[in-house]
Length: 382
Image (tube, rainbow, N blue to C red):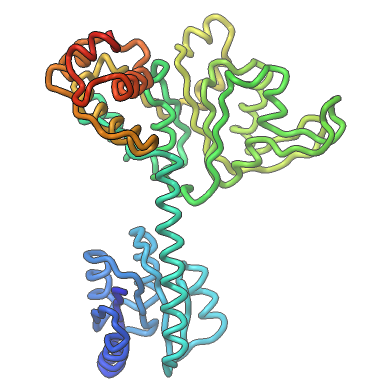
């Protein structure tokens, strides 16, 4: 493991470092908090051992700054003046563990082992999230760069975001990217397709119901807002939600409270809401199909996802991405696309957007030659 020791006592730095080095670890040392911070922000360390009592920048300040900068090292606080209150304070501020001086070798080795297991679990969690939520959006066109710039600015806030764009353009990828890069990324992410839920069930799905509140309510059910408490709720196709459900969603956004169907009891929830639609909500407001006050609550930030036809320069990158993705998922042998085949794909119109391109790439991989040719594209994609 790569380990950093921050302590103002040279004897402790040297002896501690030698012991860990003999155990096969890579060790660096810092004589004060400022130097330690500089190293921790420049290089990744699996574990950081940090003394609490140091001049100028003490250990708690180091811990707080590491947390603020998002450093994911396991930080172990050490002190010769420790007590339970100090230990609890360190853990609350994000420390992995707290060890009193004089340092006990067995305790140190156990802490390193536990920190290693914790780091492995964290890395596995990141891999699983990538599988579940997908990779970053593909594309280098100006339109996509603007979308990424908006995500970078907005993700770390709790601002509600309305994501607009045509069907198949990747609105759900924008929502997942906002979630992955937010301060709530370790908390629940719940998706709701408002168009897929019958209007008579949407309130029960969103807000839950009590046992016996209607014929098929055989037990209590927590709605999507409660399931997402502390995390993020993505309301896809919000433009298809009934007016009655819209009124209840507005109340939750205003008061951060909800009541289940069949109950008068208020339940407090803390949820960041992201919404998406392929409809023009201003037109829907004019038709009386969508509440204007809800629109203004949802559209604190608006991110418009471009159609594929407006960013055709991304088609070569997207094609390569889908070839790798589909072949990995299905076990098919990878095939190259000729320059002429890519050119034809770029000239084609894409009413189905990214979703249509993925389907076309999969069809060409199945039916095309060992190298996808112009003729293959003409036969199977145009």
